[in-house]
Image 1 (cartoon, rainbow, N blue to C red):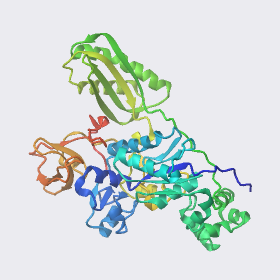
Image 2 (image 1 turned 180 degrees about the vertical axis):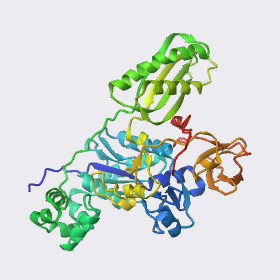
Image 3 (image 1 turned 135 degrees about the vertical axis):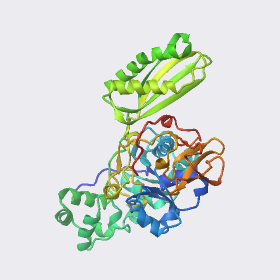
Image 4 (image 1 turned 90 degrees about the vertical axis):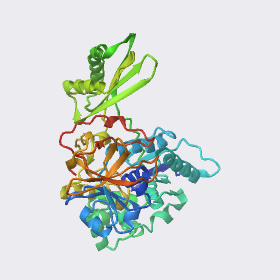
Length: 480
C-alpha cells in the first residue's frame, strides 16, 4: 500500500468544547460552577447526555443511565437539555474558527476541524496559533475548549482529546510516532468493542502493536475495508481534506416601503407578500424551515425581530405564513414602519434536533455515536450530540406544574430570571434566581398555581434572550 503525500506542517486544527452541555449550564448558572452537573433525562429511564468534569471524577460518563449516574454521584445537580442555549454557544465557538479560515468542517454541535494552511504562524509557531484559537473561542463563548493540531485530521483529533480539559496539543510531523504509537488501539476511529476484541486476540493492544501487523492479517481479521483503513491509520496516513461546508442557514426577504406604514392593519396587509417572496426562495433551495422570524424596522431606524418556532421543520406554505403572522403579533407597532422582513431558518441539522433521552433506545444511540464523526476520538469525552431526533420545544408562558422540569428557564415578576432546581409532590417548585451576570442567587420554593412563574427562553452567550425561543408553541411539552 502506497503512503499518501501529507502536508509538511501541523496546520489542521480540531477544536472540541469540553463537557459542552454541562459547561454551558455552569456558565449560565453561577451556583453550578465547580460542582458536578448532569444533563439529560430526569425520568426513571433517563440517560446522561453530558457530565461535567466534577461528575466524571466520580465515574459518571455520557450515555449512562441517569439512575446509575445519580447513584455514582448523588451530590450532582441534574438538569434537562436546553438546545436553544447550546446552539447559540456553538455558533460562537464556530465563529472563532471562521475568523481564521473559511475551511471549517463541523462534526457536531461542539466540535469542528479547520484547515489553517493559509495562516502564517508568529514567533510562537503553531503552538501559539493553537493557543490563540482556544483563547478566542473562550472569549466569544465563555466555555472551555481544547484544541489539537497536526498535519492530518487523525492526529489533530487525537491531539485535542489529549489536550482536555482546556488545553492545546500540537503534534509536529517528526513527533507523530512518539505521539501515536503508545496509544491504545481503542482510541482510533473505526475500532469499536467488536474490533478491539478481535485485535486483542492477535495481541494488538496499542497502535504500535497494530503497526506491526501485516495488511493481510488485518484484512483477514477485520475485513477488507476495516483492515485496510487501520493499516493506514496505524502509520498516520490520513490525507482527508477539511471538507468546507457552506450549509444554507436561512432563506428570507425584506421590503423597504416607499412611504412609512402606520398601524397594525397596514403592516399586516403587507406581510403576506413579503412572506411569499421568502417562501419562494426557500422553495428554490428545496428546504423546510422550523423557525419563522419577522423583522420590523421603524422610521427612526430602530429594528425589532420576533420569531416563532414550529414543532418540526415544514415546507407547508400555509403553516409558514401563519407562523409569520403570529411572529408579527409579538411586535409592538407603536411607530411608523419603513421595512418589513421575513426569514425562515432552522434549516440546518443542529437547529432541528434534540436528544432522545427517554430510555434504552436513546442510550444505545448515544453510545454508538461517539466514534461516528469520521476521525479518532474518545467516546467518554463526547457530548452525544449525534444521538439526536426531531422533537418540539416546550411551551412558553405560565409555568404548569407538569412542565416544571429541573433546568428550565423561568421568570418571576418580583425575583426576576431564574431556573427550576427541583419539584415536590405537592406541586411546589424550587427556583434559583440567578444569571451569569448576577452571580450565585438564592433558591425560593414557589407554587406555580398561585405565583406568576413564567416559562421563558434561554439566554445566549451575550446575556440576551434568544429570539427563536420568543414564541414556541408546543402544547404537549417534551418527553424527557
